[in-house]
Image 1 (cartoon, rainbow, N blue to C red):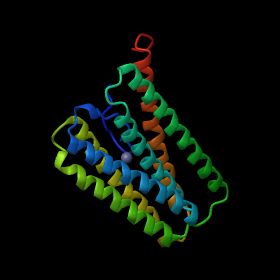
Image 2: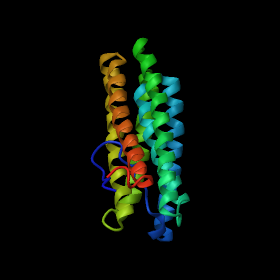
Image 3: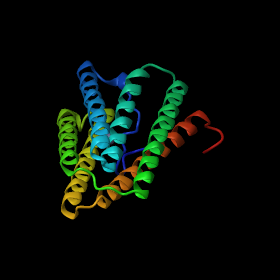
Length: 212
Ligand SMILES: [Zn+2]
């Protein structure tokens, strides 16, 4: 697979957990738990604040959590089984992205200004969680390729965390919901792009002769 992080939500590459030691696996499990907690917090905050960028940001936490869960789950499985799991994940995160696109579409029809305070607090917790993951992974950034790709993804998540904070600040500064929707759509497009790449990669692995 040629897949290497280019930009945005790119934590979608499978991690080969089999080659990791106990300490590295433990770090990945902690990063997984942080992502699940952040995902739940973001969805809840998106609901009560009416912010779309929090919802798009939550997608990335969901995708990352799925990547870590499935990577831990497929240890020792055959290549074909791994490709099927990757396809399952690709379709699952693509479906989640379509659901978010639907919500954003509804909000475009009836734009409302999100509650800045709730949005800002959630955006800061999200950034703090992303920084925590980055800090946990930093000692491993130059070692094993799996750990360094997890570190790279976590660094991109910090960038995404800043984008959501910028959205919250712009909502406050302009008293409008449009900055929130614009950031939400940008994050969603990046996420859809990486979900599509996961599906294409898995398809190629499952049908090596058809597409080359
Ligand atoms: Zn990510």
